[in-house]
Image (cartoon, rainbow, N blue to C red; front, side, top):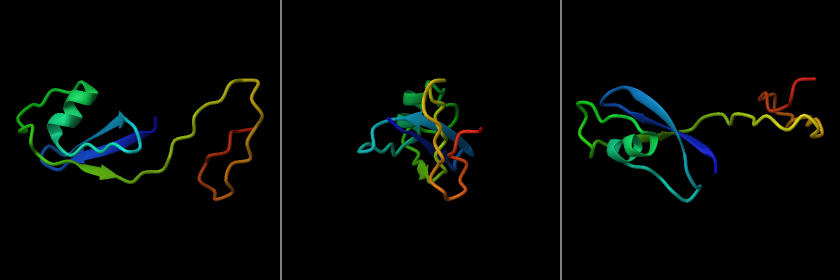
Length: 80
């Protein structure tokens, strides 16, 4: 499952959460529950925005073949 970032404009917080590609969180309450974050002063029904962000490469096992990356210069290649 991939990681996604969501931003709550009401408290100016951005949180990362892992969920399926077919799932979307729409409120601060859903996001807080999934990440184990306290609601604080923000009502649970406050909308959150899903952010578009650059994927973070996953570290492969030590014996995995070295990938050259996608060629787009996005740092997805493993360091030599």
